[in-house]
Length: 207
Image 1 (tube, rainbow, N blue to C red):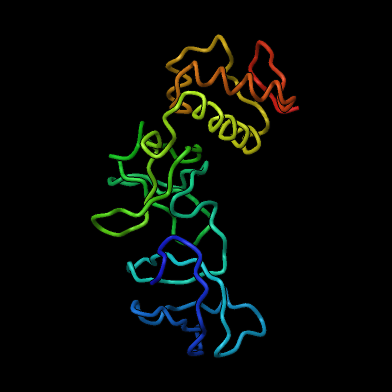
Image 2: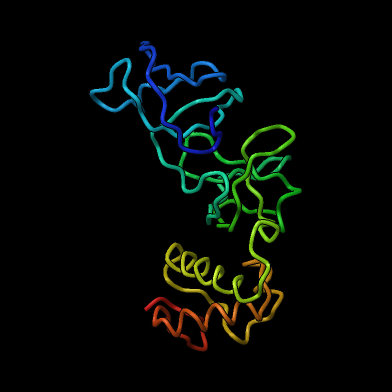
């Protein structure tokens, strides 16, 4: 059975002008477009591909590696918005949809957001949610450790600096990261003890 929004190793069953068809079992044949076909692959070979849905909501394969798969968290940039929600750049041709109901605040083009990649149980479409708390551990200590990694990734992807510090309003921290000020301070302390960041009146910065 195909794992949607994940990596699958599939057998090549047919070559056409516009790519390869892969054996998707009960899900039928799945197209791997020509631009993603590695050199030297022939009928009968197996290939690892990421499976998602194309513009027509049909299964399609790619050898590109998205920034996150189903069940993972990532900082993704909002590429564009419309009347239904936001579309996030996750490294594939088709952007990842985040509906308004799954946003903590209206997403803005060019801004990055911490999201969880999931499959909508009603529509079986891939989507993102910024309401990540329901998918994270609930222990305060574990949450602080988890957020340490989130904060480190944020710094690495945003010029190595964050203007939020110990004296920043809890509302600003919650709006930016979706965590309490207590969790934020614990994460900052953890990164500081590990000598990964410096702390100043302006904020925190990668060493």
